[in-house]
Length: 214
Image (cartoon, rainbow, N blue to C red; front, side, top):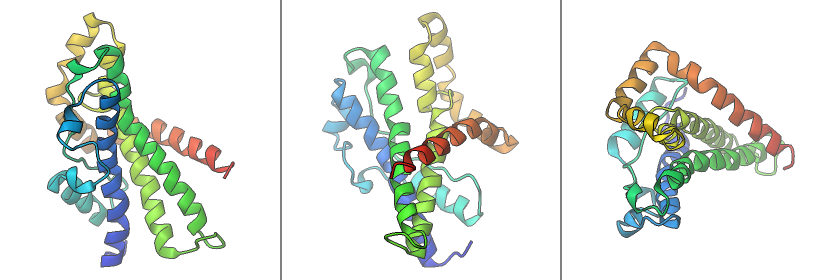
């Protein structure tokens, strides 16, 4: 990969928005279902500066890009959600948790449309725009797939806890303090990519199907 300033900027834009809009989506949907915590703290906003974490939003994805890693991920400052404030906590948690991955998928679709337009012969043909749009598709699909894994505190883990009966949900939720280490171990052993592959393939298939109508 060419590590010019232009290339870094072309990757930085989709990475930052993928991570920060993921968090903003959580806060927005939490507000709809009754929790105003994120809104009162000014976190229901599209302004990336309100969500950026210097390590998770800048350093980690930047380091992975420099390594030419096929797996780029990161995180923003978590949006505070008081799940007890939701009108129906067990049910509504599914929607709040699912909002982040859904936002990533929606962004992947938008970047894919832009990529189609930026390709040679497209309405907005541009090599630079094509690189940025391609990065936007890849990063958003990776974040969607990663966050849908049923490992607390990832969004998929919260969804799994909400769907399980209480007798199983309570012990399963106790994994949450160790979830980050579980992800690191899976990444180090190469199992994380294999677990994400079905979700990535499904996302790519849906995008191709949607683009056939554009």
